[in-house]
Length: 265
Image (cartoon, rainbow, N blue to C red; front, side, top):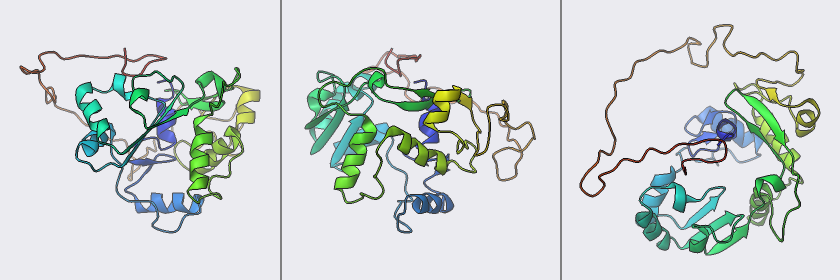
């Protein structure tokens, strides 16, 4: 949960690309295709499916492969009987998991041993735009591997060896920082080495910056991330509950989140 902002910066939602780019924006797609050395038009202009849309797609037989990583949907998703039924209809469910007996693991056709957070290195961004390096400090067990190693290996076996030639988490991060160059979340001046030496840093941190030259506040120049460069203000009218209580589901559950949990407490 503390890396929610970092996940969005990296394009970790179905409608996003790295550097706060949109899948639906042709210019954004072209920029990422060039960075990833892909043919023009390779990135699909249609956003991917959100979490519950994936469940609905499995119910309709429209999803042939479901790969679950870094989450346990049979705890965090609603209407678990419906989710389980949908998973049974998916021809191939792959689960990357650190615990073999997690609720979702029991539904996996292929279970991949994932390294725990303490067993892998990486960087995270909190809600004040502060990027922190998190080193591994425990030995990995058995055949467990960091997620990036697994994804890179699959990418190479699918014929994209050049795009997945990473040898370390630091190299993966270096590619990401380059994709942020010139963007709102510019961290092109950061690296695992700098973060380890200098400690957490706030973005923007463009190439050539030092810890003493970066701005602690955004938009102090009154230039905002909109086409007109002006701030937008709006008022919203509450529309009520999207799913009001009914006879079948008479209760509304409000869940919370904190440092170590995401919608599961």
